[in-house]
Each structure stands twice: as structure tokens, then as C-alpha cells.
Amino acid sequence: MRAAVVTSFDSPPRYADFPVPEAAEGHVLVDVLAAGLHPRVRSGADGTHYTSAGRLPLVPGVDGVGRLPDGRLVYFVADDDVPGTMAERALVDPRRSVPLPDDADPVTVAAAMNPAMSSWVALRRRVSFRAGQSVLILGATGNAGRTAVQIARLLGADRIVAAGRDPRRLALLDGLGATDVVPLGGDPDEEADRLGGAAADVDVVIDYTWGTPTERAIPALLTRRSDRSAPLDWIQIGSTAGADITLPSFVLRAANLRIMGSGQGSLTAAGIVAELPSLVEQLCAGALTVDALPVPLAEVATAWNAPTAPGRRVVFTPNA
Image (cartoon, rainbow, N blue to C red; front, side, top):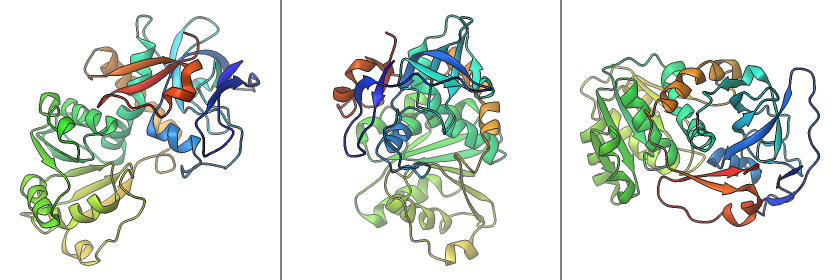
């Protein structure tokens, strides 16, 4: 079969032949219709993701839309120990798949599910989020952050504070449900005042940045909370601004801060998959805005690092 194949962690995948994976017990072989190019896929392809085993060659891709041998359409999440989804065919464990309506658009589903599930699963599995609570989305101008604004709205958030560096993308978030937008960057004291003024009393933070923005945001919020004993659940999902932070010890004593992660390991695969049918339902009902760019998989080498419009997600179509 033809696939995107990574032979060096320093180079984009190339379109090449790759052996068809053998369907072991408990798996079925599907025809892949669409596979999204997510940040998680990029980090796996360059060997920097925390789950990377460092083995080459590999086929990138962590999820996709495929057609089963009986003709049914499914969204699926690939096992860690099988070739990835950016190939003409892929192995699917039916327990890690979700049926799709016959009229579902494979490209839209492949573009939206991975970024959407990060906040959907975090708010439904990592904390007991309730309608009427408030959320700060740190890193709201990325694809996952943009989708998180919509997810928070769908789940009934009373206030949604969206913070990010890209002013063009921030300006679009009002129309997606953000009640406040906060630009990040510039003078640290001014940034702290902006964040504290808008988000000091939120109930949950969805953090896609980590690094310097998080180092600044934690004390900015906690030192300005009207009730420091009120719980603040800080859910770390991404690290676009850095892998590490320096956390002053006083903030853990002076406020009720609860830091946790949401991802592979902090949640079981079964727990994640259990949340996907309801997310698929929302997506197929048109409740989420998606900007997908379908690209034939044969063009993977040039499309991998090509610039795209703000908010757009590349989706490779192996069998287009």
C-alpha cells in the first residue's frame, strides 16, 4: 500500500510504499478516507511526543475516518503499537471506534475530532464541570483552543475567557462563544492585569500553552481571586509555549489550586472512547465550526510544513 512514511525525525514524511499491516486478533483492516494533521501527529513524526519509542520507519497519524469491510463508516483512534493512519489502509480495534452516519463528511470529522476531544474529554472526565461555571482557555487561538471555546459553550459555561497571542484569531472568538478575549504577550505586569481582571474567578482553566504564559497566568489569577479557597481546576493539555514551568510554592498554599493533566495515561483509552459518541453527535449536528483543508496523501511531503490560514486543519485523503 501507499503511505506517508517517516524515515528521519528531521525530515517530513514522504509518500512511499509500506507493508499492509496484518489484522491481528481483535483488529480489522479498514480503508482510510481521511486523517488529520494534528500537533500530536507532528510531535509523533519528529520523535518529540512523550509516547515516542524512537523507532523508524513509521507511519504517522493517530486517528482517522475509515470504511469497514462491511461498508460502515467509522471514526477511530489508532492503537499505539500499530502503524499510523496516514496510509491507504489501517488497523482498527473496534473498541476504539465510533460509528458515523452514512452522510457524515469524513474530512470534517477527521479535522475536528482530535482537537475537539481534548477539551470535551477534559471537561467531562477530568473535572465535574457543570453548566453555569466559568472557563479560561489559555492558548485559545490554536485549533484546539478555538474548538475549546465552542465546547465550553456547548457544555453550558456561563463565562468563557479566551486568551491567546494572535490578535487576528482572537478577534474571531467572540462569534464562537467567548465572553471575554485577552491578548497575551507584552509587558508581564500589564498581561497579569488583563488576565486577572478577566479571569481571576473562573472555575476551570484549559491550558494549551504551559511555559511562560502559564508561569505568568497562575499567580495573576490566584492573587486576584475574590475567594482563594474556591477550587481552581487547572487542566494541562498542551505545551505549545514550553515543556516546563517554575511554580512558586506560595501559590499552592495561598489558594485552592488543583493542577492536573488530560491525555494518554491520565485517562484510559476506554474512558476517552466512551466520550466520543456524544462528541460525534454534536459534530455531525453542525454544533462545531470546522475549517478543513483536504489534501491528497500523495502531496504529504510538500503539504506537511506548508503554511495554512488561521484556524484551518490539513486533512490527508489517502484514497481520494
